[in-house]
Image 1 (cartoon, rainbow, N blue to C red):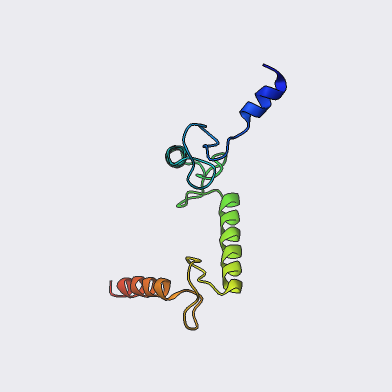
Image 2: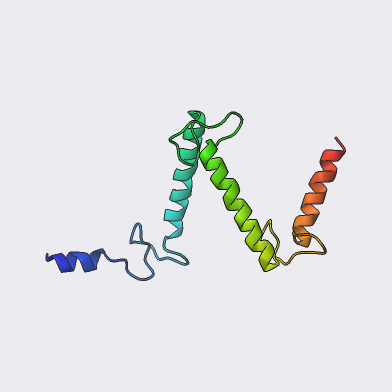
Length: 126
């Protein structure tokens, strides 16, 4: 087989999973089976890292006490969430779910505001 034929045959076919190349893709690049296997693998790796006291994101540094992240990954996570909330606020959508418009003078939608209030009042009663 020539090099060009190998290259063309290795290219992803439209509507086939980019990983297994067997199943039809409904949305995205991967079939549902490969997506599920990926989620299971990620969950196993995170649990394994957590059990060993490593950061669940990078797996290369020790996690901080009481948290599952190292200091570097924790700060990146906080920065990412902060940026996402700012973008959502500028767009006028709920900073929590990002699905619905902001409600009243809040930065969250009606549904998220209701959830937050119910959690606050349930903790207050304890």
